[in-house]
Length: 213
Image 1: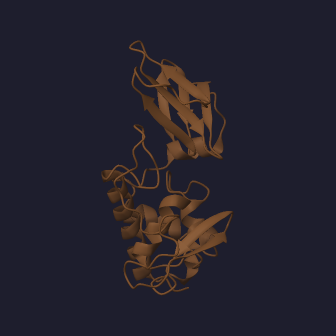
Image 2: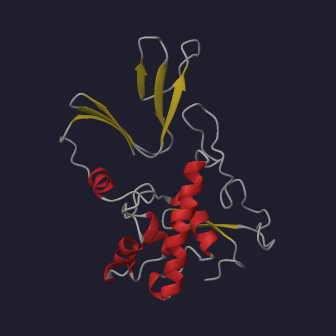
């Protein structure tokens, strides 16, 4: 989520909102749900792509679970998201029977970690999205933590994934390993064909050789 403060008002851009900057000599998006025009006639527009959310509200007014949780929990890019914090998350009894996808990418347990970036995190950890949390050894949990931190850090440093356009309409510089652009292609590690499967209301991508269930 991206939150813009304007005095005591807030504009909230959630996942699924395509945000674009328009120079003053550029036409605005034909369809949009939000348009902010500046004094120099440049603008920022936002449009919803299949799902997502936009909000405008006064400070303290929004009663939304995901918004509140996102503000209360540390970002995986922050120093507060350390081994001790992650260990406290993964050791809870309530998550032991969950799959790794459900644990990592639902209920905003980790702000900003959704299904899109989950795929490469689990590929780098060599773990299947359907694997249960309670099957992980102590060493496995260490590997998973390292993969969460390192994969997201590289994605952020390179301006996001190459499957998503940024504020200026250009795709990010992070080359996605598993996703819509690589399904059916050889795994970069072993050459096995990358698979796609519907799971938990979305798609998962994996190499069945490198990420054995």
